[in-house]
Structure formats: structure tokens, C-alpha cells
Amino acid sequence: MKNFIFAFLQFLLLFYLLLSGPLYIFSIPFVLILIVSILLIFWAILVRQFNKHPGSRRAPRGVYLITGGPYEIIRHPVYAGLLLFVINYSQGYYSMFQYLAFLLFLMIILLRINHDEELTQRFFKHKYSEYKKKVKRLVPYIY
Image (tube, rainbow, N blue to C red; front, side, top):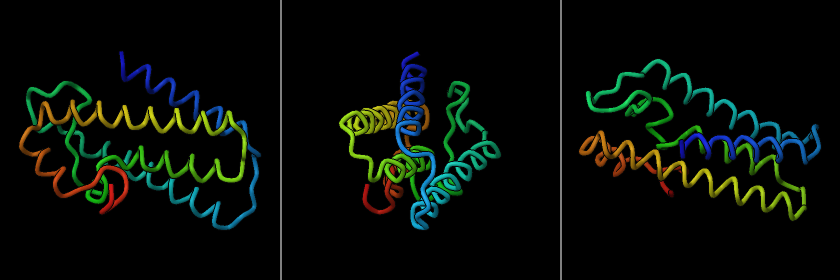
């Protein structure tokens, strides 16, 4: 239930951020970063769909340990892609409501990451600990 509420809030904030800015921007770097963020999200989703074997008999449905594809570079590529998309899209719109919406969006993403990692750690103890030592959360080699 907690994850559903976070996902719902995340969707609402993303929707607000997208609608509160202009719907068109002609900057080439802007478009390239948006494309990269969307491709990262889709790549992660595809890899997850093709590698949905639990690896642990105790793991509930929907809890998987995937270490290939973009998951070799960062542990949460979908969240990283979403943050890259929102950060890029929010550039240049100086509104207090947008800053607050972005900060709330960031907090929800970080809470969801912590929740996902606790759940995964519970069911894939040693494998996930080793994976965490090798791969950073959102930014390769940094965080």
C-alpha cells in the first residue's frame, strides 16, 4: 500500500511538472537529454521484463534481482531516468511551486529507492549485498 501511495504521488507530481512548463522547447541539448532519459527508462523496463525470474523462492511476486543491462551501471535506472527527465524538463522554469514539486518528487523517489532496497535486501541477502558493493544507486561511480 505504501508503495502504491508513493507511486501515485510521484505520478501526480510528474504530471504537474510536465503541465506547468511549456510544452515545447527547441534546444538541442534539452531534446538529447530527454531522449537519453526516456531510452534509459525503456531499456531498464525491457531488461526487467525479459529477466523476471525471482532467484529466491521466498521472494514475493514482483521482487526480482536483476543485474544485467542498465542495472550493471546503476541499481535504479528507471528512477534515474525519471529524475534526469524531470531535472531537465524543469530547467528554466522559476516558480516556487515547481521547486517544491521537484523537491517532493525527489523525496518520493529516494523513499521508494530505500523501500525497494530494503525489500530486495530481505530476500536476496548475500547476492544483493555483493551487488550493492559493485553498483551505485543513481549516478554511476558517485551515488
